[in-house]
Image (cartoon, rainbow, N blue to C red; front, side):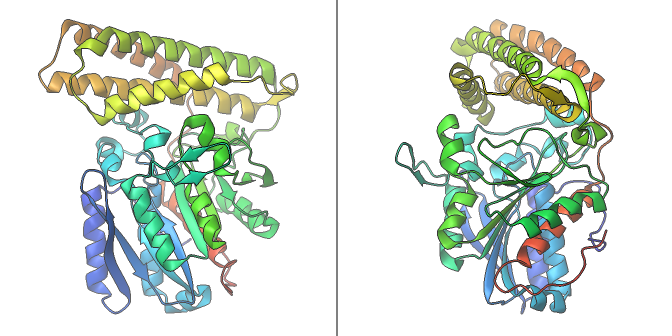
Length: 438
């Protein structure tokens, strides 16, 4: 972890491709660079393989286009493994790296990649598709009560790679915005979970003690959860399985890493908030309902004028429908009368800010695309003005409760890198005994 270099920005897709070419040219006898598929817009999906160990590891960077930390972690891991023959031998793996699983979506986020830590730039240039259009959540899923087979080309490429190498380890490198660091494992591996829980503190990152993101997960160690069955998540969102579901076909250990962009001590503060879960849940549900109603009304106002089939329009329409459906099906969980911690209260409030700014930012990008295409109708211009004012108000509210400063990118990469190496030491006879150092 000490050997992770400093990073000032997140790389563009073109820079990422150039780095892969440079590594392949510098290590012709050690690495193999090949195309394993093609994105929906025709972008090559290339995998770089390092080493010749008896077991195989697949590492997925950028599983969501607004989560580029993993692309840099892949770069750091490739450099480390190319330079350190002893480490390659200790870990005993052949490594397969896909630096960016969704290059089409990543290009739509590049407007903020050069300004990491700038929250305004992040939400103004944000793009993320709804779950049924996400690489990570479109693996085929055949369940007694649920069926999904609308696999994306990018997901199909990952499936072919896993079918070919039959991995012992699959790592999906995610990151969030405001929460502490946390992890998912598809095994109840207490020793590994305890090691993972110690990693963030080595880099000064707080652990996340809010609610786990995925329903049905269970704690193994602080901020380390079991990965729930994909059917539990997919049916609610109309999506497919995750890479963890597909990795299970090979009996692979599956690791998800989640690290934040911004730090705040409140994410791990387990003192009482003075409020109950009922109060917090009610406030969150009210805010989400206001958001859905605001954007649905705006969408109705411009729907007859929209002409551009942009990814922003598809994301807006699909996400709003998903949120509406979830709100209708929401059930009141048990135990809401219990006291809530400050971490849980902070997590709930930040989730509201996050959802507001993400969805409204993408909606405005949808309207920008119409205006840029020469379609500035009165309805589109009116909604653009009204929603820009709403965006500014919601951004000010978010800033008033905002997390602390942006975290140095190097520290985020170091935590992800350490987690992957710890997981590798648990699979395929891994004999690594080195201490993970800050």
